[in-house]
Amino acid sequence: MKISPEEVAKVARLARLDLTPEKIDQYAGQLDGILGYMDKLSELDTSSVEPMYTPVDQISVMRDDVVRKDFTREEILRNAPETDGAFFIVPRIV
Image (cartoon, rainbow, N blue to C red):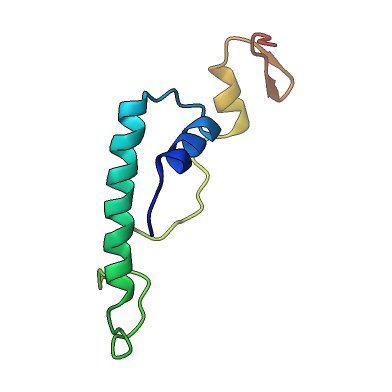
């Protein structure tokens, strides 16, 4: 698949990028090379390869999530500079 400089310019315009004509030509060549490599990959026979969602075969090393109650609402609100009942009062920003 050949990427034209016009296509690169269109994508740059949609992404609100201001590219020089030299950069557009450079990126067109680079994208053309990347897509050419992708075409080569699509030619590979992968019928004997088992599908997978990740190449790393490992179990999760993270701990299980455990629900616990560390602080009471009163303890948390006690540290707030300003509260209104069970709510924090924060400066208005809009």
